[in-house]
Image 1 (cartoon, rainbow over the protein chains, first blue to last red):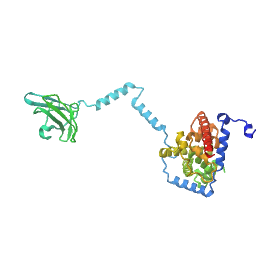
Image 2: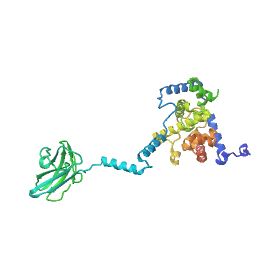
Image 3: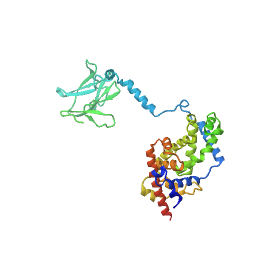
Length: 207
Length: 181
């Protein structure tokens, strides 16, 4: 019977039956490694000190960013904004903020055929505009050809033009620069000149 | 001079004191890193980087701790980071048994004079966490409590890693012995 077999089992042996064998082999491999000479150590030491001189110091000495700083800042922000001890105040603040930022008037347009082949175009803007023009294939997309009239509300603009039966594409030009369309009206695929709406006279509007 | 005294001198700007710490622990760090990474050049890079990090953080070292344990904490982290970045680059350590067995054994990069190249190759085929646990337990001789403080893993998890790593390493060594015979 060998000395190993007579050895009293350790806690490691109980956890791992191959503990003794693996330990001996690993330690033998460790012992077989070359020993580095003093010159090598000195080179490493000099290299470390040289690198340390060029390493930027981040933040005050002894203070380094912690992973939980971000979480703590987010929690603090939530507490300040939500104010869970006063939910009604937070709700009121949120409502008033929404009221300040939400537009009172939605952007929308409308077309309606009138007697004599005339079509009325209406366009409502949430923001103020100095002038709005109607452009389309019927006026060669000329923004000076069909200016729209502002009504008493100050936000709705309208124009009447005679149109031949068929499909017509159109858009609106705000303040001579900004081309916009009615987001709710039928649209035609962008042919490279920007999106436009479409209207069909004597039939249903189709994109 | 004790490690704590050398640390105090290093903090006060004495480069020779830090050089002494490097001389005292370089070989121990290198042996661990070499068995973790399997390549001499990688081990040298990681050990040097670990000493740099230790130097930069020496102000936060608590004299009540063993310097060796504190240094190995940094070293094990650096080995993990290195393996993660190397894994992203080359997927060197695969867990597919068939791929492992059919892949040619690496012959380059082994430290000259190493008698047990078979062991180093077998270690390289272990899961890095198992390899780390085996080395800390059996080669460094740490207790599970010390390993837990160093790695952040629970003691029962570490025991399982050691047990499974040991079984797998033993199987890999047996296969290598069969192949050689």
